[in-house]
Image (cartoon, rainbow, N blue to C red; front, side, top):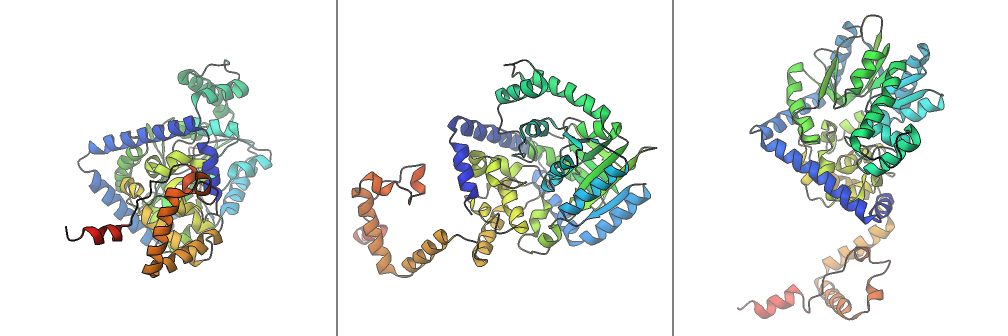
Length: 455
């Protein structure tokens, strides 16, 4: 239950990094706002996208069947995976069939969710993440800390030292252009040697059976155009009904994520090239269960833009790894409890419920409301720690009895004014770990009101 708070404590010990992480993400949030303000129809786009996703979630079975039928017409081989193990085994069988030992992968949070890299590495298959940020964290043997900016927690000087150790770059050189060129040279050979390419999917089009992938580096194209086998991994919720709906989401995605009008590459994959194979693996992995929960189904609208993370005051100052889940931040805090309520019962409490996440969500997910509802679910399912439930029950009794409330309030005010610091700032006072408590007034509001109401 306390995993997030403990991990956050470790992150904020480095005060300079915490401040830098906070400012870097807020800068991205400001770019998002500036980009959105240039479109008078921004709120109409958000509303339209939300309604399209409502339609998809309400008719998902039909759209999935339609997508499969159209994809097969195009010569695509479609697979269905019930869970992460299914997903990994399907990919493993495809690679085994083609004796593929060297794999390039573009950014995919779904494959992270399914722990595909670990699965393939155990089989002595080389799998290389080709997104620059993903490659950095792969070399560091870390999970991503953000869905769009996976290495946002790492400084350029650290990347310079990492590349010196792993890629043989100049020691002490942390120039981003130099490091990017070194990574490009390193990855180019990986593309040309690849036996297969794996990608995530931003959008699947039910009408056409095609998939759409949005990147800024073109690495998905490099992999799929070079390798004889391409595999696209898609969660069941990623569908759109028709190609005409794509324009709405493309206009929202990059602006919400990084403030760009559009990603540099918006790549459409419809059918395999002659002499090659194209596979689409459609993955459930708990999504159907989530879809059946009326209070929480809206979270399946998520298009993984990361806007909620860039604005969240908790995420910005606690880091993505503090969430100990594949998808961090506010959206992760409402997706993860569906998979394992006990393991992720701390995450819905990692929020101020300020509502900023809901305000910036391009598909209008009511994130802060779902965070609050998950807290209720956690309490109802007895997953709240006794250290929290017992004080809450005591507090309830105090609030129910005005005389006890008034007496305790007077006692607390006097104690805060007169007790020595070591009795106030100790292990029992979590609030006081990072800040001073406000100066206690000499009287409560009721006492003040009684004296001053006639005036």
